[in-house]
Length: 136
Ligand code: ZN
Image (cartoon, rainbow, N blue to C red; front, side, top):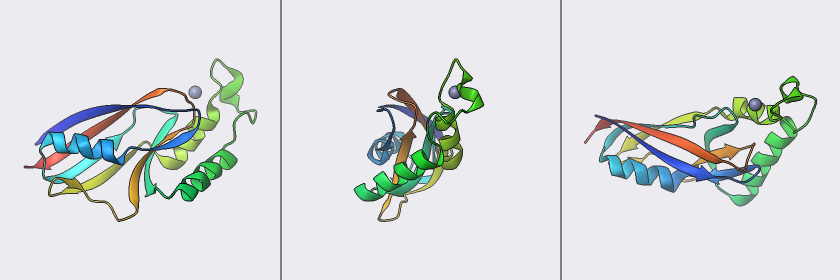
């Protein structure tokens, strides 16, 4: 069985948004008990990744991305009309999707693992597509 769902996420300027509970909710709606769940963000300036939700670490991860690909560094893409090359480059680091196992109707995640959306070019409303393949 294959099912697809979607959520929208309202974001701030630059932030990490924990979307784990919203993905889990959509997984539950599919009724699929065992299989795989693909979380895919169809944007080139927002990313998806799995990591720990501890608040200090969230700040550390965002700081790392901001320092690694700062805004306004004379990027060629920023000649216009867009000025968001930094966000595209950060997306290269996180990727735009993750695949998680599903067991007994739940996402298989380690104790500290959460699913995050990285916003680097907000505020925006981001779409996140959730594709679940498996059996009831
Ligand atoms: Zn752009």
